[in-house]
Image (cartoon, rainbow, N blue to C red; front, side, top):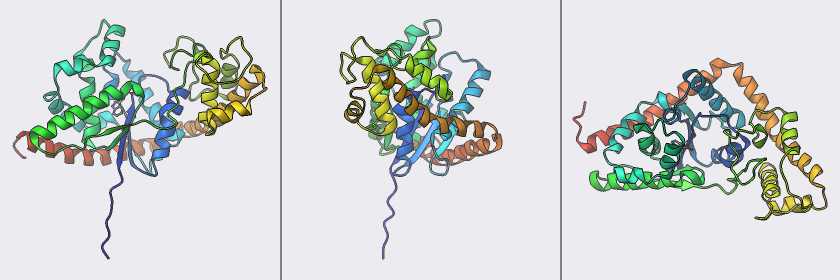
Length: 335
Ligand code: TRP
């Protein structure tokens, strides 16, 4: 009997190792990535080439890149199921980025809101890489013929550009790239600062009480939640007029897999103090195994090295297939 082997759809995503990972990264992205591993062919990379579009301390970047990889694994990205690697280990990213940059317009790149924001923030270093950042991102995705790209809302414009560039290339040179779609997960919770819930939880928050670091110890997590800002009301419900409480309910729901409505019911009649304690405990319970696994990985350098080397090898094989095809299409002499 004939068997049709259907290729699983491919997922590609990554994060820049430009800061510490927070509960926001975990609930907004990583938890989704983990769930996708069974259903899809997943590749998760550490985007260290993107990171240097803003000034980085080299020793810090190296250390943080390894830590981000270990945090991916500690959270539950399984190297047996997913391909894990550093972007800089696969030279095809830079090579394809060049070809794509010759198929991307200055005008398109000038419209990118992230470029405009970052130019304001780093006015002393508006380098060409910062401008062509989205082209490198398109190369990341198109190299692997990814079908879906799990990203946050802030990256949708870059995915749209990737699609435009892919379509344009396919039109001029013939069918070459899979045109990817963004994937916005159902539980892609938007986690806000515990101190200023109108802002996204971020590692660049000057007040460390605003964010939960993925590796914060249990007592620190609980203390930070106890200090979380609420309001002068006493009611535990979600609503635009209650950003602090809404954020805590969202976090609790995302961690426990419940809905916000279920969380509201569970805490009805609770005082804010007990509510915050309960959310803190739930988060601590979720992150304790992550912290433990991270510590274990830190003491097993050889295992970690083996993962990213194998990951790069597998990624490079897939990437070189696409790159060869692209070189041929644009008219480079075969070698
Ligand atoms: N720009 C993304 C961010 O800052 C990181 C990134 C780089 C990425 N290349 C990617 C995400 C490819 C998804 C796919 O979040």
